Length: 153
Image 1: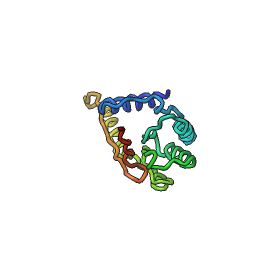
Image 2: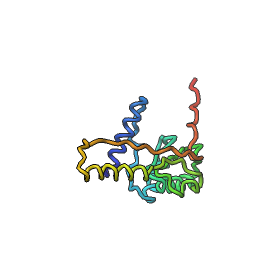
Image 3: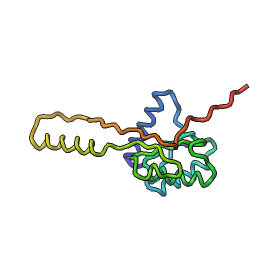
Image 4: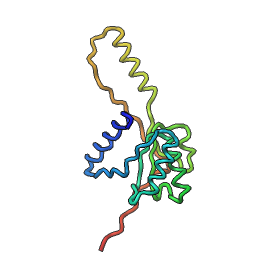
C-alpha cells in the first residue's frame, strides 16, 4: 500500500470509530490512483455481495471512471450509490452525474508553506508546528441520502 493511502485509511478508520461504525474490509479498495484504478474499483464494487451506499474516492478522475463503469452496469448514481471525489477538478460538474467533491485550497496551502519556509530562512526561532488547512465540500448531484432499510417484522 502506498504510504499516503495508509494515512488516508487511518483517517477513515478514525472517522468510522467516532460514529461507532464498523469497517468492512471488502469496502476498502486498494487500487492505483489513476483512472484505471477507478475502473478496477468499479469491478470489485459490482462483484461485492454487500455494497456500500456511498464512496469517498481519492480524486475526481478516479471517481469519474468509477462512476462511468458502474453506470454502464446499470447502477444509478446517486440512487444506488453516492460518490464523492477530491480536488474539485474542472471536470467535476461535467461528469455524467455532476460530481460532489472536496476542494483543495492550493493557494492557501502554498502561501502557508512559503511563509513557514521564509520564517525558517530568516532564522526566526519558530518551533515546528502542524497547520491544518481545510478544503470545502462542493455539493453537486452525485450524493443523496442512503435508502431507508425496510422495517423487519
